Amino acid sequence: MTEALPDVWASRDYPVLLAAAQLLDEVRPPITSNAVAARAGLEQGAAVRALLHLGDEHLEIRDSSTYDGADCYVLGITAEGLRASGQWPTPEAAVERLLAALDAQIDSAPEGSPRASRLLAFRDGVVGVSKDLLVEVMGAVISGRIPM
Figure 1 (spheres, rainbow, N blue to C red):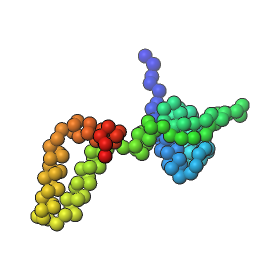
Figure 2 (cartoon, rainbow, N blue to C red):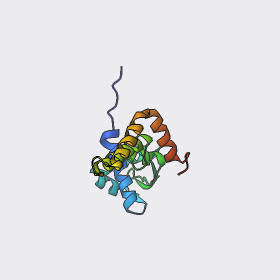
Figure 3 (cartoon, rainbow, N blue to C red):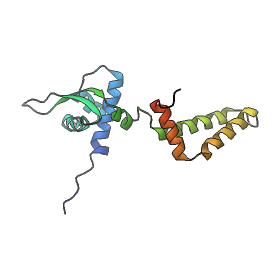
Figure 4 (cartoon, rainbow, N blue to C red):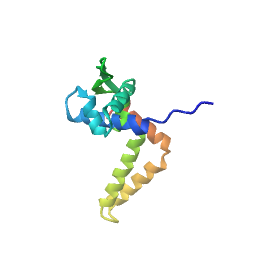
């Protein structure tokens, strides 16, 4: 039986994805692998390997490798990259945000007020709905299947 390869997602690829997503939000592409490596706190070679790996699904990259070695530029981020980096809300995250927003409103409402009572009743109703149904509804809202 052969040994499994080490997990590079948590140690290399994910930090590089986050660094690239942050840089894409801050500066105009193309973004060099050196800039991504510096932001992720990795050596340039490790960042290039991660970028080439992430280019399959998560990032739009341009390979600029030469005889001197592998290199690439980051041109953009895909929908899957946005989801993985947390920049695109998931239905589960939307449910959590809804509940957190309701909790914040309840905390700021005067205790015993009609507003506090309505908010508590609404939150209890939301929590009483099955989590699967809430996730399905929030997914439909996020994707535009339920118009705003």
